Image (tube, rainbow, N blue to C red; front, side, top):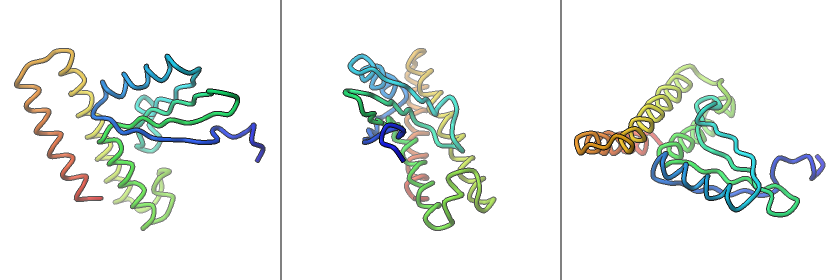
Amino acid sequence: MRLSQMQDIAGCRTTVKDIATQNNIVSAIVEIFPATIIDRREQPSHGYRAVHVIVRPNVLPIEIQVRTRLQHLWAEISEKLADKLGIDVKYGGGPDIARQSLDYMGDIVKRLEMLEYLARTLPTEDIKSQMATIRNDIEQILTRFG
């Protein structure tokens, strides 16, 4: 493959607390560098959700993945399942139970992150408290699963 045809020559990842922070980081990167944004939150790839920012500080592209903690935990579980059950798990294949579990966990993460984001714009202490409890419960479940 020609170097000029590669999507990125280098990459890095940052993991942040929540969607609002993810949006802020992506905006900050775009203010500094010319960039292309691939928002996998809007169009997930077989459940994978994150924002990829392709920057070109010089000529060669560099990919910066910006994930929330929950998106990162989901991706780590997907990687572990792919190691055990085959790479197809990451691309919509593999055993039905693995695929269904990843889809289910991804849907929960998406719904929770949207509720958290809305709670920031319409804050009440009750909503914030409930979101914190749900977040902690999901993080524990995902961490045990992984």
